[in-house]
Image (cartoon, rainbow, N blue to C red; front, side, top):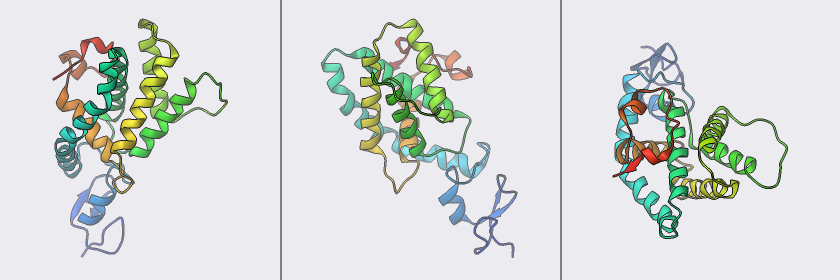
Length: 208
């Protein structure tokens, strides 16, 4: 009997391409995408990821609508567009990655909040996700005339949505729900679905 390549305690029953051996179902379920960098082609990762996104998409979207409704009523549709863009950039970042946790997302969002703050805070560069979001927002702001205060408000709302939905006991709950929300409720042009870049003016994006 081959022992699990991760815990070395239970019997390994699933071929794990990331670890190059057999892994037990418990370790596979508990650590994939969190501590194990699964290839996105792994059938266990793909099946689980698809299931979680479908399962949580509507729940996340309901919360998202509730949290963004005050902006809509206040005539701040461009801030909603900016929130959508941030989510699309996160989606783009994780589209080809299996490894990632909710804590990485909120860390990146809070880093951006500090970068857009009127009070300059000297700190080292952010994570790869933070850099990706920063570059995407800068590209967008070259085309759109929005004050930094508007960006800060959109980021604040994004963090509010995160904190209302994330659960520390489920390290990828926000990612599953938000990515499912993007796939189910955002309509993307075909060229954006296929293109490596999702950076575009959110005017071309519509919610069902």
